[in-house]
Amino acid sequence: MCHPLMVGDRVRLTKQNRLAGYQPGDKGTVIRVAKASPGGQPYYIVAMDRDGPTGTGVLFTEDEIEPDEPGRLN
Image (cartoon, rainbow, N blue to C red; front, side):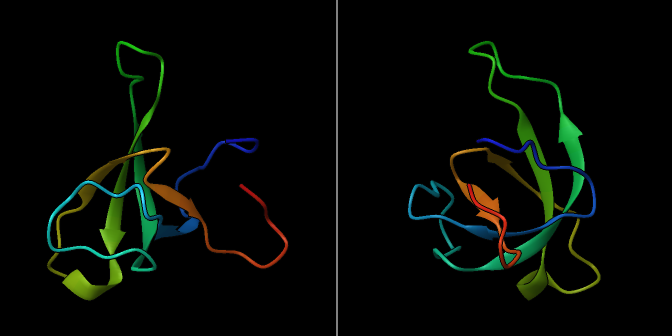
């Protein structure tokens, strides 16, 4: 990913998403950036829109999400 995601960034799921129950294009907001995995890839905790205000956040790797902002490229 060219531009690292930060807390507050809007994102959408890519077709690389591995989590059952979520589809490519589902959107959310990054609420935390977790430590990098052993391979060096960071994890992102995302509050998914579809989970509403009671959602606790879902863990994704950077290949499973992309910025959902006009003009910002992955």
